[in-house]
Image (cartoon, rainbow over all chains, first blue to last red; front, side, top):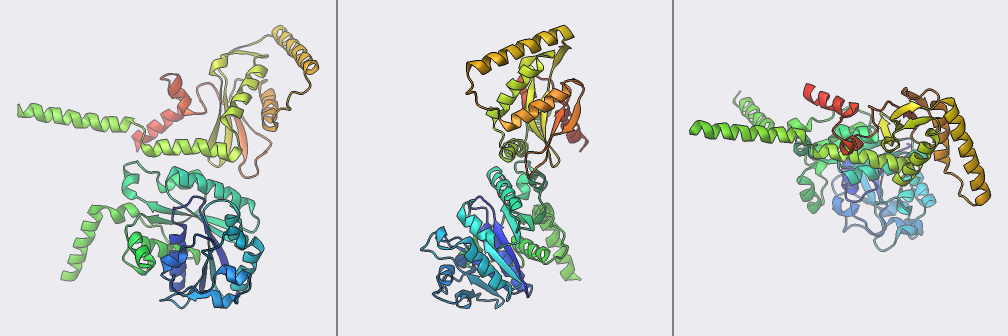
Length: 271
Length: 196
């Protein structure tokens, strides 16, 4: 088996890289793939929290690199899905504790046993980014329809294009608010895609459910009713090569549509 | 009385919506600002460098043309995936041969003097040199709008250079600043809006 190594990056912090990693990873595992997630944000690890695995971490990526444990020992299995595991970042060390070569080496080893290796990249374009990208051949650039996030995404895309190892990159547009787009207060999906001239892998609507799911340590994809959860599931399917239509968020979130849906549901029950 | 109130309300509402239509939406402002910023990011062309290029182009072109120097505009614009440098030159008239010869001779003289005066003058920026060469070629056919690809100095995004007529300006912001004349682009955008 030779797995695909996908780095999830953004440039700007706080746009939802880690949330995206946790959800895409979980979604891919739910679809039956063997998935390992690597948190490369040394010193500021959070992926363990979003997955609810913070209490199970014994060894980290630094322990693997410094040979205090074997790679397999450091992989923490997910609570629900045995197909999913996490290689956590060290909280007490900084970005220099792992080198590009070492990360490349870890990815190569993991490729043999896993279908997908998702690398959660730290914010910024410094060494942490260079390390995270080192082992990857594909990238997902997370951005939001805000100026600063789009600008940083453009910078990241420039850097990714300069890397020979990266064969493809696609855009994940996070925190989209259809109401604001409708009132022309927010850049639309089309605007961002046109400005960055990049392919889309997914559109994730702003969803308050993300906050509760983070608090509970359970990715929102596990909630099949939530809009963001379904959007992430679609992202996973697109990664796997399926041709999935993008959700029409305007329809999904407008009050009229909800009322219609409600009545449709009632009618269905009566029959 | 009641009718009056309703009429007033109606008018107010109408006025409100009209105002909303006229004002540039936050999204449009964001898009336009982003485009400008990204072009600067991608090409490493700062406003200072553009200004320098502009003044050098004025110097060069004024040897051949009589033009409105203040109104000459040099802007970066994006057309699809291509980056374009838009130069708009308001030409008053072309100079006749005598004048050109004279201007060239003067320039030559000035150049020689400056070379002997100080040889430490910093070498010109690579990019601006390139653009100047390009402008040299175009000046023969000007002021017709032509578009010619520039030797690409940017690895990621291709660059092209275009010389439109005066009416087509590179950047809508400039139009608004100068006067009420709307540039073609803006008009097009407006007509698109209404058709939608």
